[in-house]
Image 1 (tube, rainbow, N blue to C red):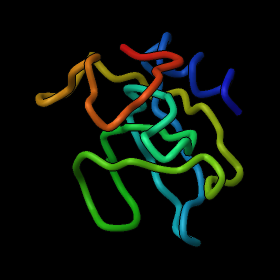
Image 2 (cartoon, rainbow, N blue to C red):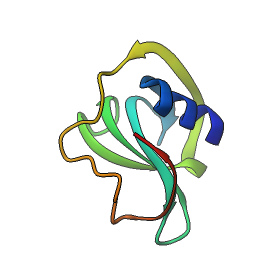
Image 3 (cartoon, one colour):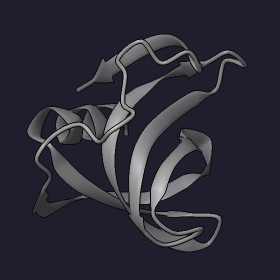
Image 4 (tube, rainbow, N blue to C red):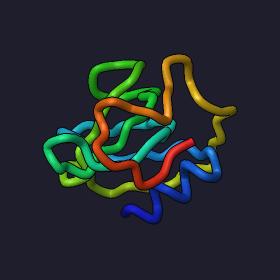
Length: 93
């Protein structure tokens, strides 16, 4: 799953997955380990769950991830490669 998400980030492709039993569509921006040591995806959520906006997703709770054919232009407002929530970043825009 790490490679799938990092590939989607590099290609600027929307990914879809289930999280908390809800189908989500997101623009993945960054993947890394948070300060609790959880592998976490920081993404702009387009649909599903709690609506549109910035969300963090623990990879342990993601199921059935797929890269969609939909592209996104680039980083959303508020994105920073120096994400203070992350202890170690694996890949990012």
